[in-house]
Length: 283
Image (tube, rainbow, N blue to C red):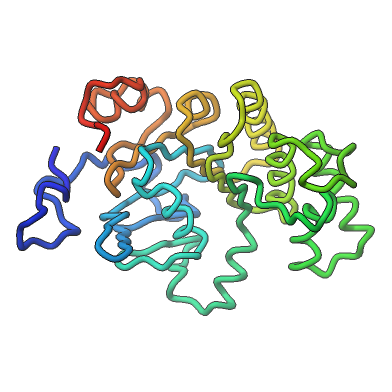
């Protein structure tokens, strides 16, 4: 399989490759209306470093999709494009039927309100207790009364098992509790799309498994389009309805979870099995 790295030193458009990676049509691709989030030939470079090199992906609604791939291959950059924090150099990010870079900044802000994001470390405000952290989006983006906010916040904190930690500061709770608080905050606006940037980062295997159980439980209860970025193969196998594998800025496989884990593609097979023999090396 040839990639853009094969072209170094030639007078060729660095976005292109000699042979395009295998990119199957995602399930349900027949109608664009079934996909709240669509990535169309998105390319992004930072200086001479080309991160996304023509990535196409329609995320299946009301499902959990996990994006896997080596470090530095563009997974977190993809999330930032979806939520409108990064503008692509080329291509389109279509969210809820709109190219988010063909609308005003105010309209983009309204679109972002339909997203929930769980960051790697929870990204809690250190000056606020757990309750106020979770209440923050409601106070910022709605005109609800404090009694209404309290009802919503306590319901979310109960779902993640943190009702006894409402008055604690982020520095007073464990890493797993910070993740759960971040998850509760991501859900308070009843988002259509919830994104997780390496939710298992920094957690031991047991707490990772418990967080995965929580993701599955809340998705089953509330629905929505969940998009996870992770390096943890066990997480991907446990929580995913669909798995996308990204390498060198392109999607090289996308399909149902078991299909991915049974793939014959050399890179996909190597990455998902953790084998040292294959196209992925130390470079």
